[in-house]
Length: 245
Ligand SMILES: NC(=O)c1ccc[n+]([C@@H]2O[C@H](COP(=O)([O-])OP(=O)(O)OC[C@H]3O[C@@H](n4cnc5c(N)ncnc54)[C@H](O)[C@@H]3O)[C@@H](O)[C@H]2O)c1
Image (cartoon, rainbow, N blue to C red):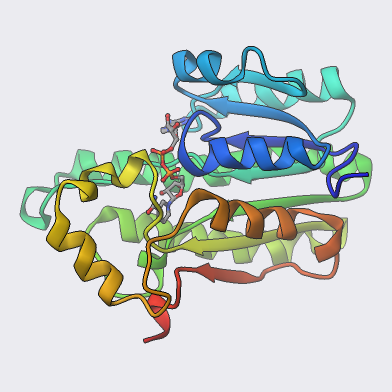
């Protein structure tokens, strides 16, 4: 029996990168997964034929959309055991070029999206009497890497996750956060074109490589699972030691 047998897991950002990897890892361990994303074409291409995966269009900045998505999932599966808030965007803009609209958009998706997801799922988890939420922040929330709204939005994810862990512990809803370092996904594909940037990053990483989506996916699966049943409010850095230096 898999570690995720009979669990219903809702994963945002499920059309690409780490979210996509998590959908595969969770289903391999027996979960029923709802892959949610704003990119319906990618969702369809990746999940239409996959057993135990449903896909669903979700814009994480839309609170009504969250409410509908939770209701649809609960109506169909009877429960929602796990929420992984993985959808996110970053920016390549230099600090001087960042506008208020850029700042707002990054916070809308990365920060409000995470908050709105937790707010929408908790009532369903309370009904079951327990639940597990894992939020994806970033190492840039912890170390001075990137004077931009991305770091700030991921710092916000950290703060609201701790607040949620404190708030919902009494309901047996656990909330944990992971802080990936540089992980090879479409989000950082541009790095591949800069050999010097890649080599620089690897040199600064004690484990001397970039992260892979499964490095994060496996850690998220542990935190989401019943193996972590006394862990809430935890912050797990998955960056090959980058931020330990
Ligand atoms: N790749 C890295 O180096 C890295 C490092 C630290 C943290 N992260 C975080 O990890 C998470 C996953 O990133 P990834 O590298 O897999 O990126 P990715 O670009 O491969 O995947 C992100 C997914 O989020 C979806 N998305 C964007 N806006 C959305 C919205 N409004 N509603 C619903 N879905 C939306 C995209 O369509 C995409 O499928 C993100 O939160 C990212 O900030 C990434």
